[in-house]
Image 1 (cartoon, helix red, strand yellow):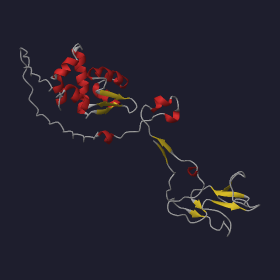
Image 2 (tube, rainbow, N blue to C red):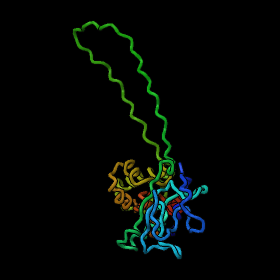
Image 3 (tube, rainbow, N blue to C red):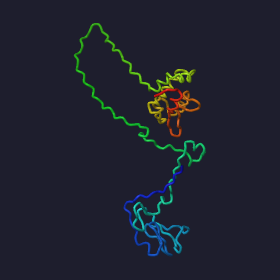
Image 4 (tube, rainbow, N blue to C red):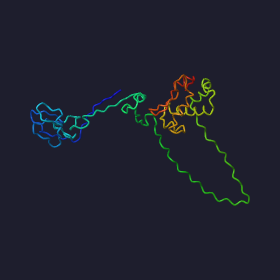
Length: 265
């Protein structure tokens, strides 16, 4: 899709009117006026080349160069002067991610990734937890020296709670179809794939490549390799996890996953 737009009109500030420069019967407009033979441009005007268009019988064209100056009172949304915006129109090409591969080295047809704000992926900033000042412990009297040292009793350490696994990943583990598909794949590799899959499931099925790399503990340039190793989930040539290189995202096709292995969320 090719979008071509006019430069648009914005009401200028402090517009000035150069009145009285166009005599009765002389052709002209808000930004230009026809010159008679021997007539010279005035303040704020430039003489266009002799090869430029001019009305029949006119010796030349004097154009205003200041965007805040006009030959008459401007209407709302108009500006003065013959600025560059009068001759240049913006063009915006919207195409698929494979367009640059088809177009080759044509810079004008190369794809660019639009900046994506945090709220687009629902990354809501969490409020910082207020720090609580530590309580001052009461001073205890110094213990009396003992002839035989007594070792203090060791406090048993409690292991941190294990992170909860998404329900979808837990059900995938018990899927008979999944067990058959990963048969022959080393168990550590399967566990890594399930860990990476859990990251995508927790994120709602889509992450920027940078965030995916950070949450998976890999370097950004390794994202393509990680997604390739997750290819053990693919079925019938369809990717369950896809690396959108142009969009710089990693996407989980959840519907394909549910259908392929017969699991539910």
